[in-house]
Length: 325
Image 1: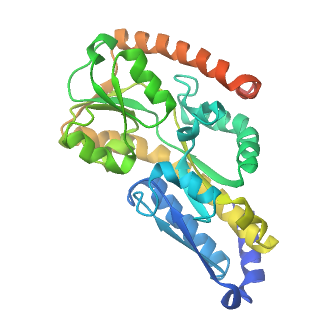
Image 2: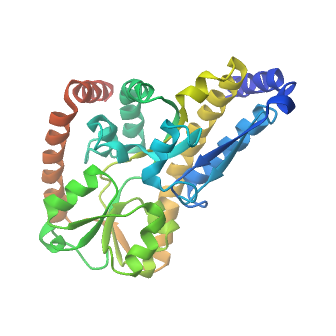
């Protein structure tokens, strides 16, 4: 880590002399609230780049979907409407199944396993993004995903007919396989959706529920550790090509720091947010044996479906991951 800081400092010294003449502002759209740990990590990354380039690049973050809604962020960066942005990686699974590598139920259920899975998948995802005029900078996991409900749920049968917030292809498929009704809702709209009855349930981390104060509408959180999805930060490929090596070094160095810091925030935030849900009146605990077994069977179905749709690239990622176990 000290070596990394030295690289950033050296790169900063190299660009400071021309900062005033070539200063540029980068607006960075983000989908989650400013208090969410991903947004906090993004803000610190932005400050690192701004400081490291001596002000030659000033990154300004725009959380809560205030600049572009979550669904529009990737396209905005691809087309140059924004030079940089953050998005949930699995939100792109409909365009390429490989983007859903981190949302395969019960494949990687801990931070250690999620890190191995990311190591296995990163080269493939980097290449896919490059082909889409995007440069991957860093990715940070969410805490393990669990189910939120406004009633006690002991089996899949208890889920039938419930309006379920879907945020990617995997969550929509879970809704279908459990008899729930999927409703596409962005993170910034969660609180209102539950308050107005547009949604009654979701699968997400304790962090999302805590940030959005879902205890105002929901009553139960079941820890099932289904998966640990990732948010990632990307830069427009043409913008990246226009940077000199010194600025690229600052960006990649700050990105490494952000991935490290963001991951540890996710780890520390996990129990903190579960405690927060409890202290605000929610019932928090593991799912019962019946529900766990039924969800495991659904996970097997979804794993097979993902492997079928992701093809050779998907199989290579899973094989590489399993070789690390």
